[in-house]
Amino acid sequence: MTHASVKYERMLSDLRMDLRPQREWGEGRGLFLVIGHFVVGIAAGAWLFALIFDRPAALVAAFALAALGGLAHLGFLGKPDRFWRMSMRARTSWISRGFIGLSLFLAGAALYLAPQYLPGTPWGSESLLADAGYAMALVGMVVLMGYMGFVYTSAKAIPFWNSPLHPALYVAYALRGGVAALFVTALADGGAGELPAVLLPLWGGITVLVALFFMLEIHGALTSGNEAARRSVHDLLAGRVAVYFYGGTLVLGLFVPAYLMYTGLTGPLSAGAMALLGVSSAIGDFFMKYATIRAGVRLPVWTHLTPQRR
Amino acid sequence: MRWGMVIDLKRCIACYGCQLSCKAENGTPPGVFFARLLKHEEGQFPTVRQLFLPVLCNHCEEPPCVEVCPTGASFKTEDGIVDIDPDMCVGCRSCMMACPYGNRYFNDKPQHYFPDGPTPYEERRTARHQTDVVMKCNFCRDRLAVGKEPACVANCPAVARYFGDLDDPNSEVSRLIKDRGGFPLHPELGTKPSVYYLPA
Image 1 (cartoon, chains in turn yellow, green):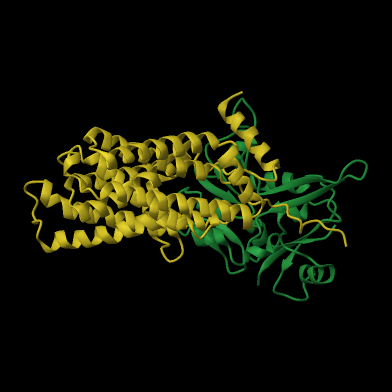
Image 2 (spheres, each protein chain N blue to C red):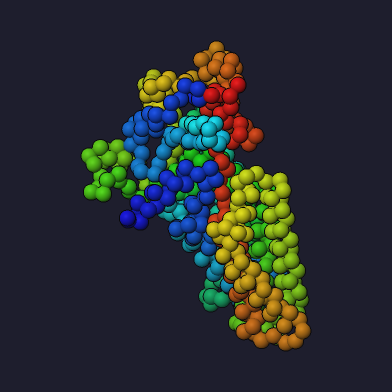
């Protein structure tokens, strides 16, 4: 059987199921969307913390990640050459708002960073243009942190994603990813010794927040969610995507960095170990998003309301 | 004016005529079903019964798919039909995630029904659809424009489908809904579908 016919047979089989898994976002080319959301979230968080803690390498990394995220989004689209059309419905569409946010961020960050790193740039780092870029990047950063959660919340077909906590969870992911990016870029920014001591406990606090939001979401799906939401939780914790959740999110994304954080709080931590903490934390975030997206199950069309005898 | 459909589940004989006539009319590629039939078994032997539910786009009055579309490719006409402009669609599939009825399809590559390539029929009908964009039922707008009913309605041998103006209280569809307790799918979502079902 060819790949196309296998895919076709699987689709027919899906259509016969009461609880049909979503495959459009997260499988095949859909993986680009997960990657795009993942790196764009880290970019926004990294920009915020890089400004707060004055980490120039992290600023550059944030810009590069946002550009990479934009490319990943283009890779996901069926018609990437029409990407500019995504700016047309900001009034109702979160994807449209996200696109505008990403454009603002990239343009603003370029205006802000260019005079600092590119000799011969016609405007200076203290100029009005650089200040405008700074402001644009800030607005874009705020949009990038929040929009992804709203994109999923507005997906009415997937009850598991409809939790009002989802946007808050994505903001928390962005913040956790931002601190992780600072750990990694510390290698280029003067080493771990130069990093503010508050970053480790900050990472720990945000991680607790992420875990709390996630557990509340799971609790909500199990106690007040419908059949599809409960099935998604089952798929996530004990079903088809559990391996990504336990291996990627818990082991790589929580236990490894938590151990490194404990080591760092009780003694000195090398720049390499800090970077490892950042990378494993980011991998955990990726798998958390990937597993949650893949666990999405469609609302069953057949309900108890349908065919009933009078 | 708001076009709507009523499907009588008592009359439906699950012959798949709606699905086939839709495919013939619209030339949809493999894996794309603007109209399809769901089967469901209920009970335990010996009191088992099989239930059928023909489904299609519900052409909601409050369509969540239109709201999430970032380009405006998904739109609602003045007569209540929800459609897609394939020239504006970027293929982000957000509308598929927003449709709680799962009646939107992504046409991801040129597909054929037979291994030897497209038949002359497919070349004429299927190939006209753009790939890498989302597709859906549009109540056969082309047929409506020339005064015909949608293909699934016109070809239902059991006369289980009715089509008309939901805004007109005297139309056949409005009367059937009122007299026989017609219900939409998932009314709790607030999408206000234009497809109603009459109880079996």
